[in-house]
Image 1 (cartoon, rainbow, N blue to C red):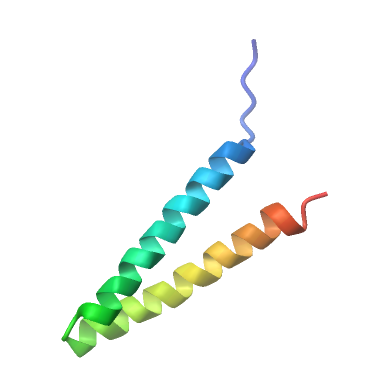
Image 2 (image 1 turned 90 degrees about the vertical axis):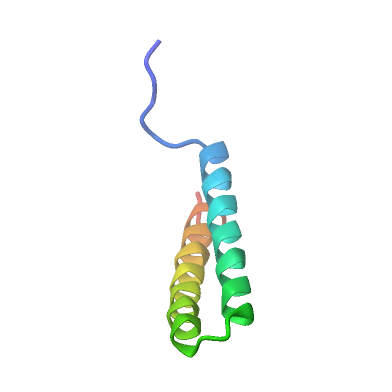
Length: 65
């Protein structure tokens, strides 16, 4: 039996869940840290990660043929 190299829907859902979990954890760090530098760096990474996850979900689930 030949394995397909194309990712399955289960893989996409699992990776989306992991990325969302990491965004939530980074958001908690942004809210709870007293250090401004760490807050700014984590806030930038949360914004970038959210954009990546949003684009990924849009491509996979909404624009799918």
